[in-house]
Each structure stands twice: as C-alpha cells, then as structure tokens.
Amino acid sequence: MNILLLDNDINYCKNLMNAISTLNQNVRISFIANSFKEILDTFNIDIILADYEFCNGTLENKFSNSTIIYLSENSKNDTICKTNIDLIIKTLEVHTKHISEILLEKSIITQINFLGYDFSLSGTQQLIRALKILYSSNENYYTTNFEKTVYSQIAEEFNIPLRTLKGNISYATNRMIDNCDKKKLYSYLGFAYCKRPGAKTVMCTILEKLKLQL
Image 1: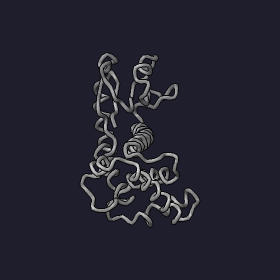
Image 2: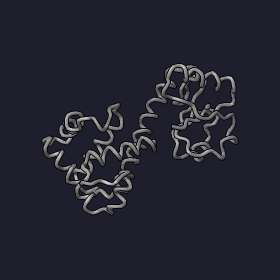
Image 3: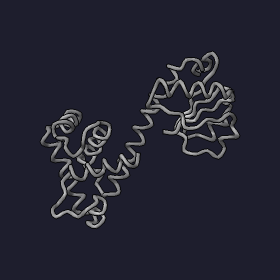
Image 4: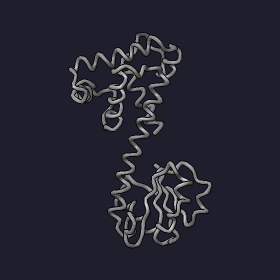
C-alpha cells in the first residue's frame, strides 16, 4: 500500500511519520513531498495525506484514482486536524482495508480468469468467496480443513447445504480442468500431476500466487 504525505512543513512530516510508525505497525508512509511539483512524476499512489492548502482541484485531477485525505490546523471543511494522530491513523486503517479488499478481489479474479473458470457458475463465485476468506486468515492452506473452517461459513452466507456448496466448487473446478490447456494448468500448478488435481490443490496454488503478488 503506497501512502504519500504532502505537506510543506518538513518537521510536521517527520513527526507524523514517526508517530504513525510508533503507534501502528501495519500502516506505513511510503513517500514524503513538500510541494506539488515533487509528485508530478509519481505513480501508483493509493492514499494521499495532504495539507488543505493543496485542495485546489489540481491534486484531484492528477491523482483521480487515489484516495485523498486532507489535513488542516482546525478540522475545517471535512478535513482532519493535523494534531489528531489517532484519527489520522484510524482513517488510514479504514481506507487501507477497503483498498486492500478491492485489490485482493481484482487479483483473485485475474487468477481465476487465467485458469479459465466459468464465472457464470455459482461454484466459481463461491470459490472466489472462499479464496478471500482463506487469504485473510493465518491458516496453513494445505493443512486447513476447508469444509470445517471455510465452506460451512460460505454455505450459511449463500443459504445452501454444505454438501451443495462443496459440490458447486468441485463442479466449477472440474469444468475448468476439462476445458483448459493441460500444459498451461500444470505449469501454473508448478509440477506434473499423476492424477487429476482437486479443488483444494488448485485453490492452494492460487493462494500462494496471491501471497507472492500482493
């Protein structure tokens, strides 16, 4: 997650950066800039913390795909007070989580699409949901009992029996395996199988690739 701090007060930038790193180990400011000119060639910024003096439309036009959070001395015009470190951190946490969830879903869909899953199948949508849950957990994918820890939760969300959910995911995976290029699939999985890979094997491989990517 790339977070940019834009403020012409160098001391404030240093103090805020140090405070955030001390109070929250999961949020990190990636870049510091003291003028708009310094960030003209900057790309791939997810969140911008900017002093309210830069709120003139130019920043929004340049970084239309970024989340911009304005800071001011007295919390005017929907800004956050620059001295309210706790609120700044909480706001960053909320936006970071939201952006991370969007990136995760896009990355999962990219992997699923590459393998050739049929998105019209309910099993594919349920598999995507399972991958989201598993990615966010700290479990060892290969030793985790998917049926007990993940499938039961998703079956309740979709209001279907556990057996039906498991069957849906297996059917979607089997359809993918039947229709895909076998060399492409085995290259993706990393080694040649002497037997047909199951849904869990495919899902674990996707999760490993997501960990490397994200």
